[in-house]
Amino acid sequence: MGSTPNFASAPGTPPAAAARGVGVSFGGLRALDAIDIEVTPGAIVGIIGPNGAGKTTLFDCLSGFLPCEGRVWVAGKDVTGLPPHGRAAAGLGRSFQDARLFHTMTVLDTLRVASELHLKGAGVLPSLLSLPSSRAAERRATETALELIDLLGLGGFRDKLIRELSTGTRRIVDLGCVLAQDPSVVLLDEPSSGIAQRETEALGPLLRRLRDRTGCAMLLIEHDMPLLMGLAERVYALEAGKQIAEGTPEEVVNHPEVIRSYLGADASAINRSDAEPAAEAEPPRARPRPQAKPTARKPAPRTAVPRKAAPRKPAPRKPAAVDTTGARAKPASARGPRKPKE
Image (cartoon, one colour):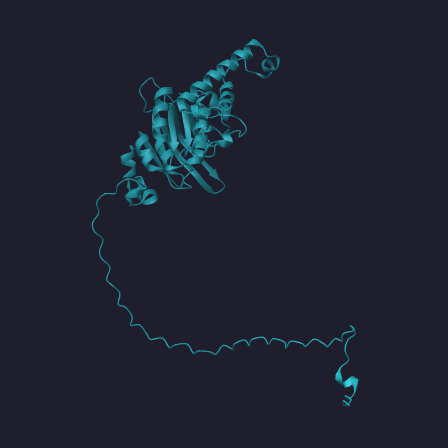
């Protein structure tokens, strides 16, 4: 596979992750072209770039999900020809943009399942037969899960189902599943996407605390510039599959190509929305527009509205004369002329 290149890390200390000449094409589209990246042990490195720059494609190449050109090292080991699970065993952990967890499991059970993958004696047959090795592995998995819950501050969600958690909390649980593998480097793909600003502001100190407690390095793709500026020690900028800048966060943010293609000249792109804005010059006052003279409106012609005639009341009918015998009296025309009195 060739000789090992000279890395920027300290002599005798291999980098947590490194890549040289990574490239990939989809038909006639060059998605990545000769990308070089290095993550020193315990460092937090960021990757920025507009949508379609090739950031997630680079993660797919580093983690083995996508065949590519170039070479990849994890903890000093050349993992170029290894599949994803082989690179995970070498110490490479990765989270995705959407945390696909089991919604019907509790937080504790989810972390226990993730912890059992690297424990000896937790195979299928020992678990079916309930052998002592399997029971011991389950106890160790429970201890590891409880340690992660305490480390991630998930004590209040220990017995809650995954489907009951917010998006930000599910991302923290997903990160705990990655840390359960005890990786030497973790790839984080936009960890702050889809979560509230309050959760984003709490994510930075959490990631730094995880780095300090576990010692793992982090390589993260992030669009939240305030989060990245407060975390990363080194930043790489990509555009259209090419690496256009690298260096400290301040150097990359002020790079002309990065400003042109990604950030722009607006300072709000790298500041929090609730930060106090700097004093600005008073904007020029707009000249008042001449007002048009009001035109008199002609009154609309009145139209006569016909009134509804009041309904006529029917004339009351006179009751027919009734004789004393109870028989109905005949009308005068039927009785004939009256006889004169004698």
